[in-house]
Image (cartoon, rainbow, N blue to C red; front, side, top):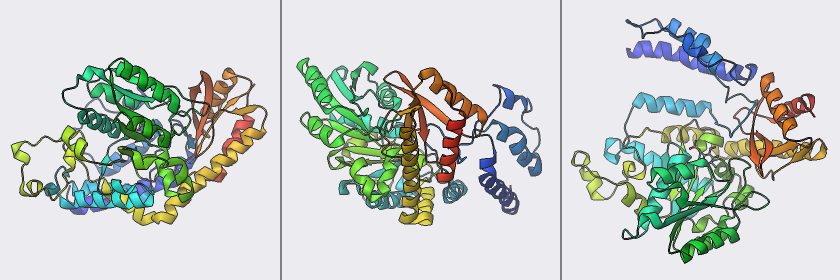
Length: 460
Ligand code: PLP
């Protein structure tokens, strides 16, 4: 494709995306296709010769859109949000156009230096500990960030220790990526202890201390605590400040998974809630691709001391040797995560921070937190509903007082209507409706409409 053709078609594609952003609210949120239906609209073989662009673009509407669940709909309240935004899409476009591989500083100095710098901005913007400055890296996902923390923590333990004796601790509410990370790190799932939670579904420090003591008494070696700030089921916040001293007594690594909730720290008055205790942790991650207006994929991982991470992940083959790396004056991010190659993801984050500014980002988070509190208050005032977990941020968890069947029917009725999409979880084996407010275009109007739907479709 010649540049002039790219320019012409590119304008059409940007128009298509802009139109999508404008009309996304008009689509039923959930894709209503049967398994195999999308494939059945595709030819059996790849085209022998190139096709005209108007046909390719027409197939976006004909083939692709019917199979899209509209995560960018303002009526999407499922899982956690996956924010997309104009500046972020444009940043991704430029990154693709530049097509650089940022594995080493030398393979594109701007890719590395912009990343380090933008992540330093974020330390300030989120009120994170100073020792994270200069020690941030963009990962593809929180799962990868947690894996890297597990690998670094494992390598910080003396190499003479029998690894089968290592034990890690996380709460029963932690994300499945912690167990997956353990497995990928060559540790057994039963080397991960699931610590009990209290009434608010946050890890109990006393239960952590007891679990560690029991393992130490058996000659096992506690090496890692993974705390969650904003659990997946209910956005519970583990008491990091109370967990750090317990872990510290055993020289354990503390990693904080703030995948969803970390973004809330852009709002100063929410920092006491989400950042408490971070001065004492070894690593912390959050996903701008969830609730900070940055397209997937973009997770940010900070380490307090990069030494263990680099020693776990650095391998230097001859063909990657270069003077800049050997000078020790540069960061080579290939040593900070599992893959070698890396995209220029900092561009989209840079565009987002510059387009919205601190004020715009705060407005985005505060708007959703306010709407969640509004919805929580409606739920509390309605005797046919019962709130099941605190609503500190933008996730509202509740159930029908009539029981699990009623809650489940309500979720199905809302989702079948196409007007909104919500998901569920189980807490204390109870079926719980989750309303995660946080899509880029979601405003109070959409939450009020959801509340109307919940009323109208209420069953039981
Ligand atoms: N950690 C928590 C608390 C999450 O809620 C999620 C996803 O929702 C993840 C980790 C996994 O995120 P990612 O898709 O970035 O790996």
